[in-house]
Length: 138
Image (cartoon, rainbow, N blue to C red):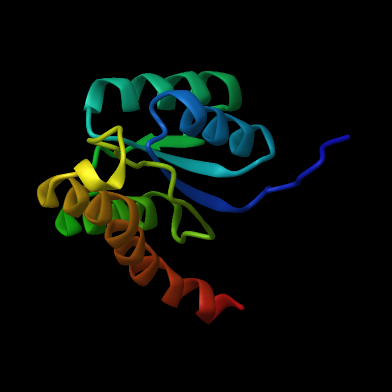
């Protein structure tokens, strides 16, 4: 018995070429979802998609490299997922960055702006790109 049944659902997972993001993508595919694997580097994305497709069948996963700091690349990822699967039901904003380790008093403006861009603004963009179609199906 599965804890979750995601059969017929489509998920986009950022930062899913390794670590927690990969585990999330694999678990969603195990639960029946189609998944879009995304991170900055094409090779690792394709490796994860290939492994998921080998386990669950071709067409379960696609690889779409995208840098979360680029609105255009995020839109291309959303477009690719919609083209491949016809919809997006789940967005998992897993990708993030931390260019600074230390007290807030020592962080440079550029480092803080990168954190805001990658960890907050990019998620806002991605939700704006995907939420309308989810609301339409509600």
